[in-house]
Image (cartoon, rainbow, N blue to C red; front, side):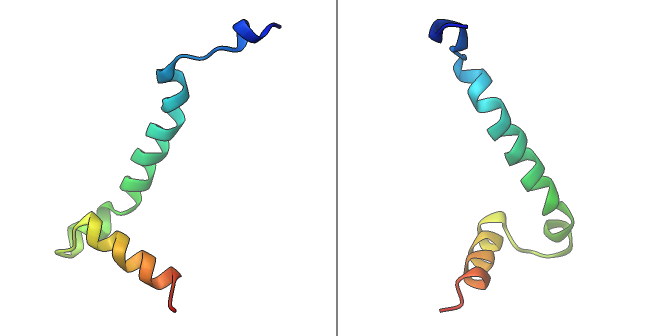
Length: 53
């Protein structure tokens, strides 16, 4: 296999990232439905919980 055979398109490289992003967002669907928090607010709370100092 040569280097040129290993070339991937941009969409092939981004596919796992997009799949992870969708899966990550799905994990918060129940919380978003039960609260008035936005996804950005959840991110801030998660950051603060993981960085207590």
